[in-house]
Length: 191
Image 1 (tube, rainbow, N blue to C red):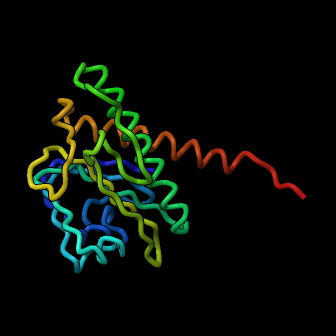
Image 2: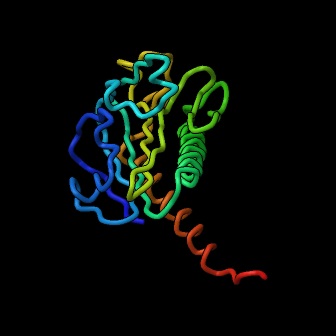
């Protein structure tokens, strides 16, 4: 599992959720998690979630911390499991860092499916999908609450640095992914 933070800011419009984006655009080959900071505005032509399409949902934000995870030889169910695992890791991390900084007031963040909320305010967006060669996940958290179509929470609410957050979350995800891979390689078959 390779990790890479992209220093250059650029917008996410859904077209980045494609096979080998990390490799062809950023030189990161194989199973990977990459991250960057940028705007978000997903047109219907690039929207993958059927529920969002049916609802004519607006998915946008002026500044978000984006992640794309890509794994190979996995089905979509495995991708959704990894997506929810990453959401859980992110929720636990933000809770812990906000408590450490003394900026978490009221209640803790909670996860509902692949989304993270702080009360009624939505922190994250996410989708998992599959191509003929890989399973991919886009996960993003608001850095700011500006430009969002719904009530949101953001990393700035807790004074969390987005690049440090990205690097820490990628490290935590890589560790968990490698541990899971090891767990599949140390058992013998049963009759």
